[in-house]
Length: 140
Image (cartoon, rainbow, N blue to C red; front, side, top):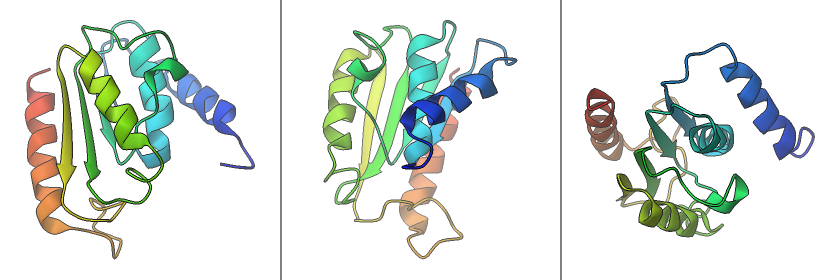
């Protein structure tokens, strides 16, 4: 991140979406939330947004969250990055603006809790996350 910078990460995300249809659900994990949130908030036609382990203030990409874009934010309630770096506060503010917004907090202190290839994996939290995400996607 420090070598590329957030601007380049967002630019790469925007380039990756250029040839895709507008009616997408944007999703991002951790740092990947930055381009996903930017696209969901600024690219017309977004059907929804799923943010895992991270969230940035809505003001980073515009004055407000689009009222017609449903959003879910998932994170652990004691994750030192999600909670300790202010992402949870950004998530709460975003959810307060969204007409269809949900913040799901899972008990634990792991950041990448849904990645089964890592020691931080939490099977119970991951199963609940998957259930909620599949229901969200089915509604879109």
